[in-house]
Length: 106
Length: 425
Image 1 (cartoon, chains in turn cyan, brown):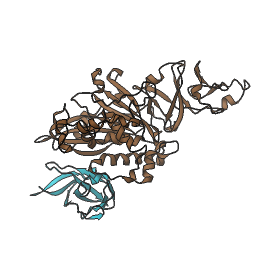
Image 2 (cartoon, rainbow over the protein chains, first blue to last red):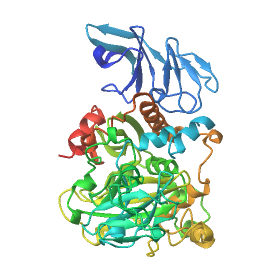
Image 3 (cartoon, rainbow over the protein chains, first blue to last red):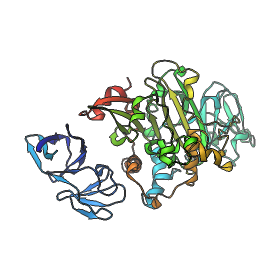
Image 4 (cartoon, helix red, strand yellow):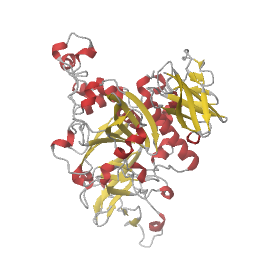
């Protein structure tokens, strides 16, 4: 069942930044990014080394994993640099006033 | 892994290096009071951040930290006379005060201008919080006080502090201290009756004074930035709707605090003060916030490793005997065959070499805190290089935190939920 889950307030996320959020009612860590005013959400775990991508570096819409330098496109979830190969799950973002949500499937 | 260039930047702490300049913005602990407790006592040779210095306590009880070598002809002032409020070089009798002035030059004409013009390098030094600190940086940036870590602010009877020599760069020491994933393996005991079983099955579960540690042996780790450095949260299942969190604090530039092993028990912390690029002092602090430590509580985990009583603070057992490694004990009773948590840590860390080549590593999912630590330190070096200041050094109140273990409901962000347990008033 897909439902809207609250992540954080727009004001809590800096432009060009990313934050890990563990949404209420889920057992998941999600990464929330803001690039050029647009918000993106993916799983916050590299599909290769299984660490939080929010520990890495965000350059434009590419997030680099801190462990081995692999990377993903945060818009599509596609792996763009080896050793990452398996794509990242992305989530549809919903913004209502100052609140950022994503559509999350249980 | 980090590049060779970043590794050099992380590890080199001598004068003029980026990290060396960054560390010099902080008051750093380097002596125990017992090493310099006698006015007019013998001067003490010191090596700190790659600089050779001499420390002494003068007639009035004031501490001095000067260049090791006389500015005249470069004699080692260890051979000097500490008397009548100064340190006198034995060669030509030049006499120095604790603040680096030259007050006598017996072989020069009495009214020589050289007395006003000549100085010996001197650094501010203070005894506070159970240790002796030095500030080796630009005087314009000297913080009013050292970081207000809890072990320093509690009464003397509430704490126990030791130091020992480790023959590695400081960074390997800190990385061992923040790496939670080694604890259940390196320091593990084994059941000899299960000697033929696979490694993981013959491990003895630690006698748990904290119930949740035994029940959930695969904690999940979260790393969060903090003003003082970072907080590492280890999350274990507690009940249907709660987690048990154990927090470790990393504080700039080289301190850790570990959650108590027992509910309301003593808290433990470390500092890895660089002697030079290849050696550091490992300080171990045990403390209680609100009552004196008992004798038994001083070292519950055998972390304070035995050291020589000759003033060298060298560990009694070291690499020259492979840390006392006993293969029979390793075969049956413990992962390492080496006695004591402190020695086990020193063994693996020293075995990497004095400066490990981080460009040759292959890191894994358990290394998130180590990855963050390197970033934080490299960013500290950047900050000082670009702005001249280290903001954390200027904010001693940011260090009023402690590590703790606590149960929090599932939906609570651990940094928010832990705040009331980790804040020191």
